[in-house]
Length: 161
Image 1: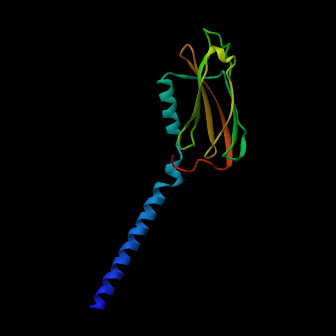
Image 2: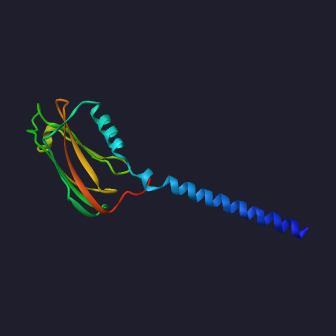
Image 3: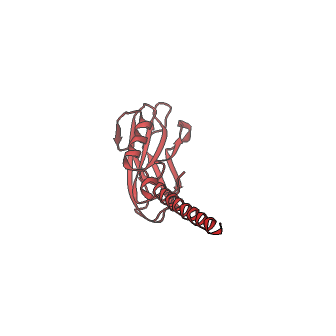
């Protein structure tokens, strides 16, 4: 009788170990860097959602980001848009898109003519070396963009959000 109990316990343990290995394999595939980071197609889709399919013109937007970043947890980013910021001609919003982050749309800033200038300075987290785009939505419904490429040596944002 004891022999039979021992065999049942041993097979149960072996079965549980196999399930555990399968679970780790599944989690490893789920949280792999290939599934966590966004792809350029995701950034293109985010831009299309912002613009509603309207064309984005290069120019008027100056995006300054360091070309080499030691730590992706703290990256200084500056965006300025050429605009008179009058009631008839102003920047309504600035959208910043990073194609390598888990969520490509990093942030959006809304402006009014009372903002005075269309200049933004902030800190962001970057998950990997990538191209970062700043898209300015103008009061007349047009969109302008500027972009910069950066090389990140120590990545941030590696968790699923």
